[in-house]
Length: 286
Image 1: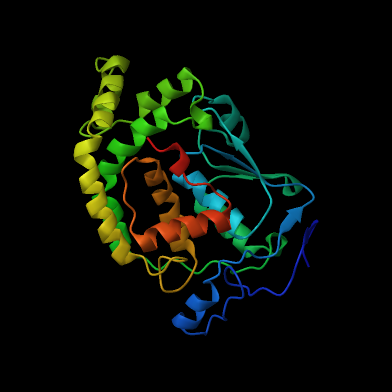
Image 2: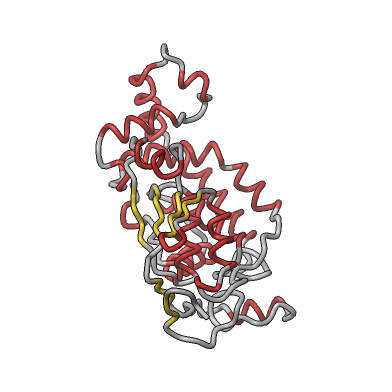
């Protein structure tokens, strides 16, 4: 029975979107079971959980996606990027995401811990909804291979797009001051003699490199297509923690004008966006 709230329908399986096959079912059966990406019953608690987040932050997106895929109604509070007071008042330091559960008087951080809590408690719907992480070393290697490339492409665009955490110049300056773009490392970037003017110049130069970087990105996206199992899950086990991580990281790539997603990857992005109720950036790409 769901505590202090309601589930508006019944009859779904306990391990993913739509009528998931039991844990002992074959991979093929389970993959077919999620193909429609039908959302589970709506969960509306009397006191809505609150996610304090930055829109661009993949760790924040993990929590929003996890709640959305489980169809748990929640409130999202986007904090200004330079706001130190709010997160420090909530959890003792400037971090995101922060998850507040009013009926438990609980505030917690760590994105995967939050998703695991939501997936383990009946008040948030069927438990064991997400398949366990499978330690996809191939996907981890892919993400490592594009880390510097994506920093060059993403970080300047965060400053150009109209994201809620960057609505004021103070917030943009705060981000730029703490987030270097390659080839600079943090000690060099943070040195007083480097200065904000040099940081802003490096961001502008990174943005200007897009024409020479886009081919490298699209080559990497062709390789990624081979690693994604289906248009509803990146791994054979079905919708799970592998997706909570990968999809949340891929979302920012949709901000890059000229990015050419392969068919399966594009369907994967769109399907989980719709099922998880977390928008992509295609309408804001630059």
